[in-house]
Length: 274
Image (cartoon, rainbow, N blue to C red):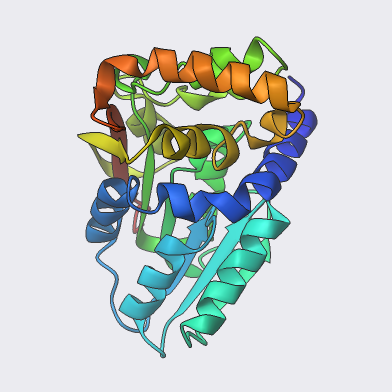
């Protein structure tokens, strides 16, 4: 897919997903976000960039950590996600948050403007992840760190059949990208190629729990990366797609709900001081 079309799919797809995203994904994503924030080691007064900030879950955690003397700039390609971050910061009374729409491959700000750069589960959607990491490297001051989290290997994510289920009915143009950084050392390699040093990477095995079939389908279809394609389905097509997806996760059924395995990868690196 042409990169411009890919960005368009991501922008408007996440606009569609924004209203349902946090309800379905706040808890499942917490292990990756927690490690990312631990590795970021945010300090009062720092200036932080949160790339692909989504609804602002990590952004708000970072804003509390850096305090009123610090600042967090949250960027996202989706207008709806940017609006959600802005609204969440306002409700929380966090005046040190700035939310703006921006492409991860062309970040706002001059060279060396930030103390820390974060990207929690957004890098795998970028047409050119290496260019995005180079941009994070550029906007960091010398000696500053970047931390990113992505999804792991496809064969370790039990919900992965959502992509062929959707693509069988309408092309989502997401599946080829989604696990591109999930292979051994792939995320760390992008960090090093972008110029970071002291790069480390950790895999996290986790379980995504859904209380019901409706919750499982809501997370997979309406609140995730295939939301734009799913919005084009009529009701019979939705029912058919739901049934096929639920059959794919049937091995993980627990009572009325599901316990679906998944994997995250978190990496960090430092912009050289010299």
